[in-house]
Length: 190
Image (cartoon, rainbow, N blue to C red; front, top):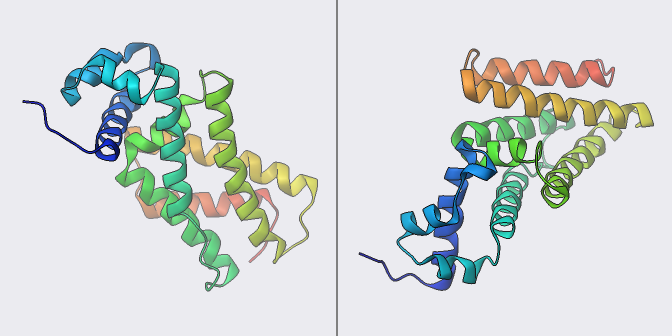
């Protein structure tokens, strides 16, 4: 039986269903008809909200990215080194508690078109600037520092995806590994 939802509720429902499907299967293996069937709506209604599958997918990636950025906003009341650790801890907790959302943002861009890569890159750039702002209080930020932080963000994305798939270390062990790796990458002694 079809449930009557407000426009905002229906849109959120469709995005949630799509997030679950895209997190576990490649883009080409997710069908709009399947999303509509799970939501118990017509395919036409889904296309009313999202004119193309690509736009639907882009909105899912954008939404998950924005959710992660909002949750990992630094707390300026913390000491600078604690801001780095706390931000990473929130990031890891998001990945653990929202693995579908994390996988979508970080796996989707690898084989996606330019728009999807740009959505992910915007998220990485926002995180990079946050980290560089904190590091700038502790050390001079150079082009080498920027490159190291960018590479570290790619490293973190990769190890978190592996961790989600295999859970071979604890979240705390992963946090310590990532913090140590960042400090080594930017050659910062604390």
